[in-house]
Length: 307
Image (cartoon, rainbow, N blue to C red; front, side, top):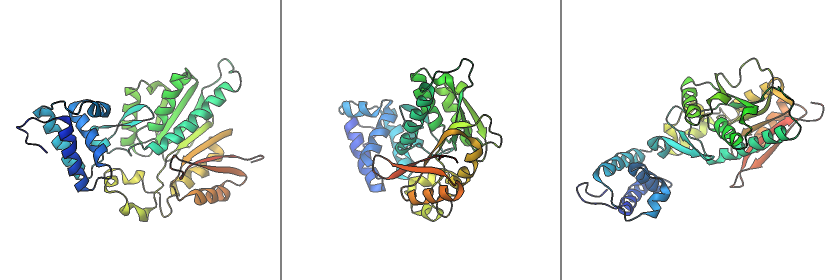
C-alpha cells in the first residue's frame, strides 16, 4: 500500500490492493480491491470506477489497509464489508451464516414465479388464509426476504406468509436482523428447527431450500475463504445429499397437493437427486434446471398424477 503519510488516489489504492490480493491467492483480486476501496471510502464500486483520480484521506487508507490484511488471510469480502448484495437487497453478512451466492437467485426467481402464478391464476376468496411458503435452512434470510421484497413490489406481500427455518439460533438472529432492516419482519416467521417444524398446518404451497450439499470429503479442497463460513452450512454428508434426502422425506406431509419444492443442488448431483426422489417419493416428478453457467442447479420436485 502507498505510504500513509503521502497522498493517494482511488486508482492507486485499487492498483496496489489488486497486486497484494493477487499475490495472496484471491481468485478475483481486482473486484475484491474495488469493493474494499469503496468500503473504506464509503461509496459503491461504481463510484470507485467512475472517480479514479479522487484523493483518499489517511483515515480511509487505514481502513483499507486493515481490510486488505483480512482479505489476504482469506476472509470473504462479504464478511469484511459486513453485507452482500443479493437479488437487489443489501443483506447483512457475518460468520453466523453462509454468504448468499448469485446461483441461488435462480431459486428465488422460480419461487416468485410459482407464487405469483398461484395468486393470479384464480380469484382470491375474501378472507382466504395467506399462502404459506417455507424457506428451509434460511441462513441469512436471503431467499425468504428476496421473495417477499419482490412480492411487495407487486403489492402481493400481504397475501403470503413465509416460514423460515434453521437449526442454528445464531443464523436465525442474523435473518431476523435482515428482515427488520428491510421492513419485512411482519411477513416472515422464524423457527429454530431441523428442516421443518413437526406440525405443518396448513401445508406449504412452495418449499424452498438451499441446504448443505457439499460432499464431506470435498470440503478441505474448497477455496480457503470457505473456511470462514459455517461448516454446518456446507457439509452435506458423504455424497452431499443427506440434508436434501431428509427434506424429501418430509414433503408428503408438508407440501400442499399442488405444491412444489425448489431445491438448490450441486453441479454434480443431477443424477443423485433424481434417484433420491424416485427412491423416497414414488410417483413424484423431479426436473433439474441449469444455472447461467449451464450447470445443473435447481431441482423442482412435485407430485405426479395420482401420487
